View 1 (cartoon, rainbow, N blue to C red):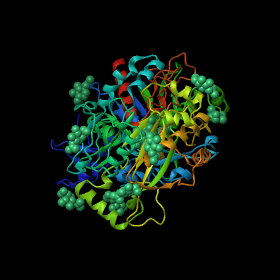
View 2: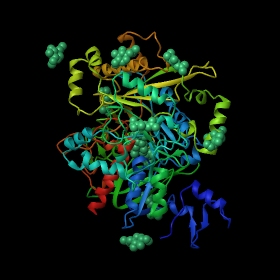
View 3: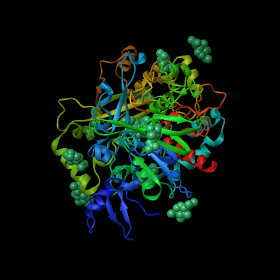
View 4: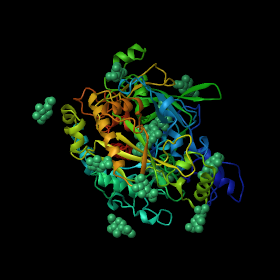
Length: 627
Ligand SMILES: Cc1cc2nc3c(=O)[nH]c(=O)nc-3n(C[C@H](O)[C@H](O)[C@H](O)COP(=O)(O)OP(=O)(O)OC[C@H]3O[C@@H](n4cnc5c(N)ncnc54)[C@H](O)[C@@H]3O)c2cc1C
Ligand SMILES: *[C@@H]1O[C@H](CO)[C@@H](O)[C@H](O)[C@H]1NC(C)=O
Ligand SMILES: *[C@@H]1O[C@H](CO)[C@@H](O)[C@H](O)[C@H]1NC(C)=O
Ligand SMILES: *[C@@H]1O[C@H](CO)[C@@H](O)[C@H](O)[C@H]1NC(C)=O
Ligand SMILES: *[C@@H]1O[C@H](CO)[C@@H](O)[C@H](O)[C@H]1NC(C)=O
Ligand SMILES: *[C@@H]1O[C@H](CO)[C@@H](O)[C@H](O)[C@H]1NC(C)=O
Ligand SMILES: *[C@@H]1O[C@H](CO)[C@@H](O)[C@H](O)[C@H]1NC(C)=O
Ligand SMILES: *[C@@H]1O[C@H](CO)[C@@H](O)[C@H](O)[C@H]1NC(C)=O
Ligand SMILES: *[C@@H]1O[C@H](CO)[C@@H](O)[C@H](O)[C@H]1NC(C)=O
Ligand SMILES: *[C@@H]1O[C@H](CO)[C@@H](O)[C@H](O)[C@H]1NC(C)=O
């Protein structure tokens, strides 16, 4: 087997620089063998057969595709992705960690963005949010969410995975059995104090990584802000304890998060730069960019046998068919995986029938059970430097940051500006007594002991006032609610994958969730109030004071942190809303799995990306064991 080209830019760059010339995407390697960039790709419009077809080149999709393709059996694997490569389509925005705020924020309000690498699905009016509609960003590019997100990498808790195993009735998912899969997917680099201020002395859980892990790059980036230790001190004063890191199954307390950043280049490490690139170079993986899976086709025995896919010329669309010898894996993400199942005949029969879709498997749970994490941002004027001058477009600050980034791979742009002093807690007694009703406490008591209820996250690239001065700095301290009881849902608007699904995350729908939001808000004010670097509160500001005013402000201003899951949830046969079994196989059909955040039985506490990679590793192992 010839070693193939690095996908896309690396290929072009290598070829352009190669002494024997050649055009973009072609070269001759050291062994005299021709390497064609195009050989990593499927041919658009040509029907083809593969062993495995993965739908969605996102976070989970690229990871499972690479693992299947790298098996010594040399399976043929195709990855179908609606988008293309962000390195080409978004300038340098997606690659540079310090530009992460540019990819997501515009969606909060309008739901509309101009981007070739993401779409925004506007929610239904949300009653809990005073009937506002909020745009949910979905990375539509190789990398998916891992190419649209803030790159924070950390893992949920021991108790939450033991709980996962308990409710799905399979020890395959307990902590002891998932921890090795978390380690397997990533390659860790400790803080580099040639670039990061050594006085920050970042602690980390050394046993949480394996030297054999990879290909995802996990590090601290090459920049950490000076606010970190000061916020840590304030959190300690407010009652949160310092913990050594956020990757070994413990979250309650505060610590510094790792990030999916390759510290060698100081660029984003996505599932595309890691798993997809390695897979394309070393296996029979074929990539289909700009290709939308329209429908999964089932044979007489209800085996998923092929996928009808759509490519497009400049204005015309064309459809062709890719056949699977073995299995089809749906990795379309929290909204589009259930959408694709529904348009293919897997979902609630009445919904399918109302759109004229033939029912293959009547599964009431498709599109239900969604877990989400309602999110609030408070913003403080501070007297330490943050990214405010970069956000403000200060010409000197930006030029200096760009120069340092390009020449030394360091400085503000080389870090995510978000991972330091992340705090997690169960609300303390004084807050519970003040704002949580008995029924809310009852719900919270049903969750594992180590499951935090709120996460507190700083963000250096916060909103700033229009008249910001050249020496002014702001820091956002947000909170994501990790234990809300409202469940969201989605359904289809039509039988066509080109139409956006209808989504309703149901943020703060239950009264108890509004109590939790109030609790988190009050705790952020306590943390800020215990700090030595906060000068004043900019958002919402001192006029929002009484509990009633605060709840109203939250309902009018809270947004999302894009952590939806469980719309095709895993569960035992006895669970009427379960969509997949404990090996992610879709109930009622064969040859079909759902492998992404939509298949989680619930959203374990914290952020999802690390768990999505783990999930892909676990199901790849399950598939290869079954072979
Ligand atoms: C702005 C933002 C910030 C975030 N910040 C963080 C963070 O800091 N840390 C963290 O842990 N998590 C974060 N997340 C969440 C995390 O990124 C996601 O939970 C995770 O990436 C989801 O992975 P997935 O594999 O389930 O789906 P995705 O990564 O979304 O992959 C789905 C892929 O399928 C493709 N697709 C869908 N339908 C079709 C079709 N019919 N045909 C072909 N292709 C299709 C999509 O284009 C997409 O590429 C963030 C998310 C966003 C959007
Ligand atoms: C897979 O490919 C490798 C490299 O070409 C080859 O050595 C090996 O024999 C192949 N395995 C199978 C099962 O065909
Ligand atoms: C860094 O922190 C660790 C753990 O808190 C401590 O043992 C060590 O002395 C610190 N090192 C420096 C240089 O401050
Ligand atoms: C390719 O698949 C499409 C869609 O199923 C079908 O209409 C077409 O006839 C096939 N083309 C060939 C050459 O088999
Ligand atoms: C990113 O691209 C923009 C537009 O070309 C440029 O102005 C900026 O300097 C680049 N940033 C970095 C870090 O290279
Ligand atoms: C790059 O690093 C070197 C060595 O630490 C330092 O002297 C130089 O000023 C840095 N350059 C920039 C642009 O930050
Ligand atoms: C709340 O719960 C406590 C302890 O279970 C109980 O004593 C009290 O009566 C309850 N209050 C209300 C209003 O239900
Ligand atoms: C989604 O939830 C909302 C609020 O409970 C409900 O009104 C709506 O009917 C649900 N939609 C679907 C498709 O389940
Ligand atoms: C500091 O934190 C404590 C404990 O949470 C809290 O009671 C106190 O009100 C906080 N101080 C300020 C000024 O907010
Ligand atoms: C920062 O602000 C706080 C609160 O106003 C103040 O106590 C502290 O002295 C200030 N620090 C500096 C370095 O200005």
